[in-house]
Image 1: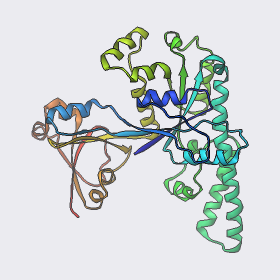
Image 2: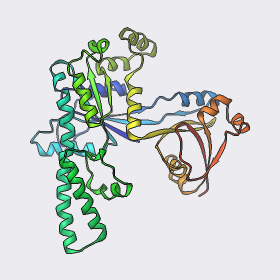
Image 3: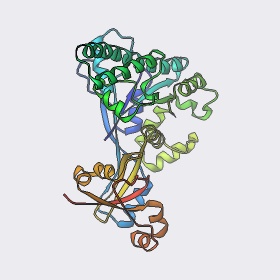
Image 4: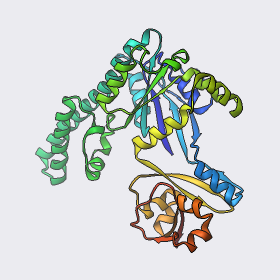
Length: 358
């Protein structure tokens, strides 16, 4: 399951964003050394899954999900080392980080500085990690020259130079083999970061031009290559507790055409290079997340490792063909039903049935 960690300076509305995205109340967070963040599983809305479930009149409809964590906020300049390490350990467990920045009250003018400051902190943390790694690898290669260790040393030295220039690992072009060789270092700035720009509900109608600090915050995001989502967490938290009918009426009063959750999910999926494939039958219709570029065998492994191990082929129909033609039989008759091998690259919206034998 994909893990998204909300983080940021205290006072930015991080816990309110968590409530807005998850429709779950938050518990008080104590900044002790055994940190237990608020966490919740969020179903990913998908009209394609809804259509298939209706078509098959299925007994079970299962959504792909995100797991959202509300990581306790702290100032990265804090001298409390144990606390800092505890928070950073939570960061390392996330697939992506969402930096929540408040653009209301006195915090608005600090938004751009906070965005740059947090990214700089992640880069600085990595610089220390790689500096130690280089020192250790230099000692190792002097005692016992090893081709693989030498290659890793050269890679770490190259990365150190880029980090020193303030560039996070997420913006460096690293091969799959290089990334694998760095996995033991658990670098921080390699994680993609999304900026959540949290505005007051009173500013929704005037977004974006007249909100204090907004142009500077967006400029900082663009400068650092961070995708961003603008929301009023306070308003969205209210909407999360309403019925669909009441929420729609309330949204119309503010001129909101779409909730923040779908926008956040699209941004997270794009940032993580995720797509959705589907499985469908009368028993169960289900949506699944998989990395863009995954082949059919890797996609099968998302469902279960046995399906990847014993993969034979994937029966595949594009959702748009399924919908336009009226179903599986019609798609087969029209030649839109395909038998794909293990190297077939899965496409967003593919409806797949995996044939396997173990």
